[in-house]
Amino acid sequence: MTPELHQCRFLRAARREPTDTTPVWIMRQAGRYLPEYRAVRSKVAFLDLCKRPELAAEVTLSAQHALGVDAAILFADLLPILEPMGFQLEYTPGDGPAILNPVRVRDDLARVHELRNADELGFVFETVRLVRKQLPADVPLLGFAGAPFTLASYAIEGGGSRDFARTKRIMYGCPELWAGLMQRLADSLVRYVARQIESGCQAVQIFDSWAGCLAPADYRDYVLPYTKSVFDRLPPGVPAIHFLTGNPALLRLQRQAGGSIIGLDWRVDLGEAWRSVGYDVAIQGNLDPVALQADLPTLRAQAKAVLDGAAGRPGHIFNLGHGVLPETDPDNVKALVSLVHEQGASRQ
Ligand code: CP3
Image (cartoon, rainbow, N blue to C red; front, side):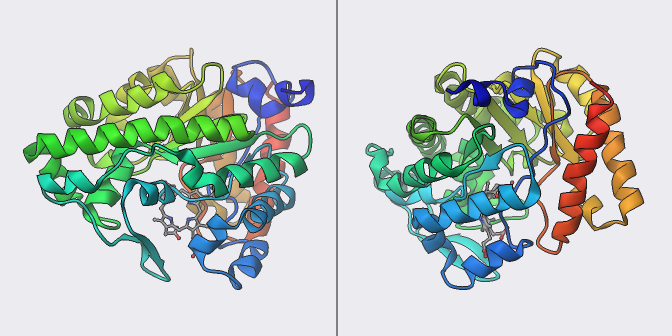
């Protein structure tokens, strides 16, 4: 890694070293709220955009440039990894992603393969290479993937879900299918994320967006061992953000499952959450995404409250508590980035 990258704000904070100001990036920063994204997206279907490295790279770079954030995140999606594992994936406008051949009974496991040849996801690694070549020398590129539970929920439900009843029924009642699916996902993720890093990512985020639907004991028994086996096998020394939403009762288990940076949603007080997971990890978060739709004084006060929670302690990466919403005004996102940089500087 170049010295500029190694010493950049994001990676210093990821290592819990002091920084000139608080680093900030925004989950889903290259999304539908951004005119630059909509312009590209109007010409190509979502999955095709993911699979065309020069377009995916353009979208990644234009978001980082427009917002002035301290990290770029690879433009891709959580679910394409499921295709080479035997699932048929489709995105329908308005309905979100769908898996056309979900697994429901034990015998379905026979058609789920572990990702053996990561080259089947070569478009992702090519995007990483193209982005890394063009990013400013001091801006790191984040790779990402879904955690085993969140991916399993799509593989079983066939799409989004409110109560994850099918997923939980298999988790409770069909141990062979559950273990087989979770193990194949975990093993595939290790290969996939390692290749993102080899291709040029400086850090990664693992999204367990839907694990918050679980009771703590169920998360511990049915999910944590698989998530932990992913984090334990990621390349050492590369910062890994472990993000989970919707259930503060899982915080300590989330920490136990791994990651050198714990990603928080907005339902917790950042200061309390950091104390509870321990100061030996970095922390990311956790402004309510809807605060970006408030007036500027409110946005400023809300951002200040998040920074107050971190209290100038090295190791805070500012972000939203979940992805930026499509109806957000990009100017407010830019204003947020500036005010985090401004207010963060006085606290170091
Ligand atoms: O952060 C970034 O800018 C990088 C790109 C990124 C996307 N999806 C692009 C995307 C990332 C990191 C994701 C992660 C993702 N994908 C998650 C976890 C994130 C979280 O918020 O917890 C999940 C659950 C998915 C699966 C997915 N992809 C859903 C549910 C949807 C439809 C809903 C939606 O937000 O639109 C997608 C589509 C998707 N992924 C879009 C984008 C920009 C919108 C597609 C479009 O242009 O129509």
